[in-house]
Length: 107
Image (tube, rainbow, N blue to C red; front, side, top):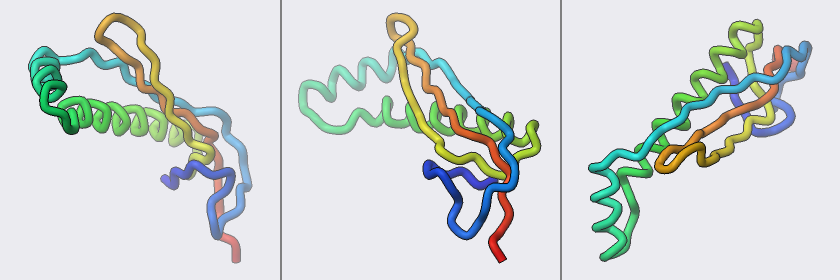
């Protein structure tokens, strides 16, 4: 599966439009990560617990989006975007979306 955040895939042409595909996940903060983040706020630096949480969330949302594209018979997703939103105290949604297409190499 080719996944890009551009309107086209270099070296390929779009031959079929399959439609909008999406994937999301909602994650809650973890008490252990919150304690670590609180300590980091005192001394500064990267909040690695939250970085790992967002990385895992992005991966899962992407996998769900790609699975939906495969169900539609697509072999690529173009114009991929991510967004986040707060859904409850201590919980956030990570949402990935794009356009599922079929592409073929340009001869």
